[in-house]
Length: 168
Image 1 (cartoon, rainbow, N blue to C red):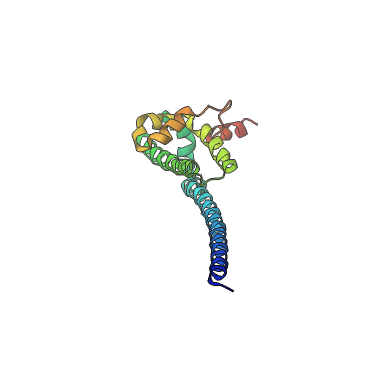
Image 2: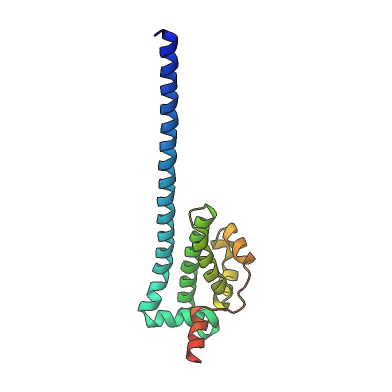
């Protein structure tokens, strides 16, 4: 065998090794991306759960949230302050979830569920009032997104669902 043949064979083997390495890396990147997306989606659910969990555990906080959503004037100044803190945390969780979706870390079907929920809450009088008072605490991208949301045909928040159940 001459040196030209040996050189050609070694170049072929080297090329195959490079192609296999690139394929292996592509599979690894794909799996890592999937894991990152799943972790992000889980973190989104956890963030919103952390915001709303106190409402389930504390009847007074639940009352403030429920009333504040629909009629902020029914709250005392101290209760309004608590409602505003809760509204900020609630909306910040959604801003983060929206950001995850924008950067393609959120599955589209899951995002549509989050977006549907947000549509109901952004038209609630208390949240709408808070958004008008403090728009600057949210990114311009999130503000534009919220402003472009189409309102639901029937608002369903914890406040309106409570009233609907009571009327049954």
